[in-house]
Image (tube, rainbow, N blue to C red; front, side, top):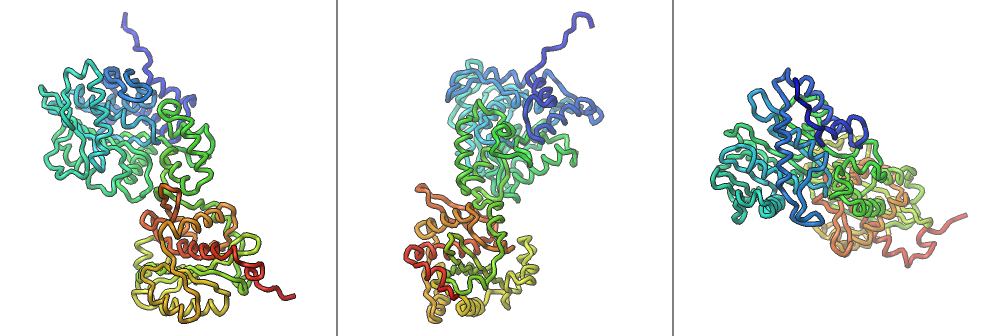
Length: 559
């Protein structure tokens, strides 16, 4: 048409082009999101979809009315980064054939410090002010209202700093409202007294990984029923609970991106490292941190990476929060590569039968696994662990089904002894320890004081030196750090016992303000009794090490 001219390339369009060309470094899942958008531009009309460029530009242009309220950009106009522009471009540009928005759910997963809370504050304000929804109800949502206030408070500051919005939107305590349209924007926590009566146009769910169950998400979803184009926007960092609602939505998002599940109502953007990436390579960090060099600072990431290289306890925290990788628990402790390498040297009981050793006994409860570990400190600085495990026979099949671990196979192979009945028979444990006492030079037995009075008294009567061993930082920190050093140095010869390996992979660690550490049974995914028993045994070896002569440590060699 004469006089018509195509609009200049939008930054969101340039981002799409550069991702496809490979000039912008992204992970596989982000590339899939971009490819999905381009593919739908070609054939989305077959499913009743169309892209409204004017609507997309309108949403992005709205951010020009907002200003940053704190930090180095305080007072500066809010400008979306190219990747953020792509997300907004997609969310508000795609339409259904009836003229309403295509996407009713959005899942955005990126590493910490990439501007999530600030951006969703602007998204909420767009829903309040410029989305054309009468009586719009916008909620910033989190597990607790205090968390929900983070993005909402940012929205309040944005309103106050904007000459265009401050005359239209009225702030009152935890409420932003437009009197003329009966629209409001409020923080909403799962800890609220009641969540009844919601009529949601837009819900912004911050840090979805922190939700312990799906209750809040279910409430939000059911409260959108009377709206013509509601949006629930999940924004989060990777989590560690693979049974959580966050992981459920994450997995569905991945399936949609990979084309395995057709769902035109869900938008997904997941910025994370690829499986074959080396997290120590700085060139891949941008995959999880698309705002790197802006809000995600190089110096902070480098400092965190150096700490993660040195501390197994911190590594999973760094990987989850800053590389946006799902981990098994919040503070996974043991590097399983180092653990496996450390256990490759075969462990033969006859090789240490005459050597001093120290035992650790963790009885757990009568219905769970109990663990007995003997630590043999060697003259060359290595340690050998020999271990036994017990579980009640009648509960083994039930626990195998629940825990998805092969208890029955382990029992068949001799790695776990099943005691008759539905509770562990402590007399069997006592008998086995006495058998070990005849074969090995057991100097001390460390026992958790909880629930172990009777067997402690009995073992003491059997002639063993029994040492009560507390589970607090005071008792556990030094041997825990020694255990960590043994694993890192590949100096713990444990023979890769499959039960112990499973427990090692479960361990989460707790750290206090003073830097003391100890295994955390509450945060660990599953049983860790063998590791706890081993650390207690190593603790007693550590205490006695300084006073041992070479002969006491290795025994008298007969030639």
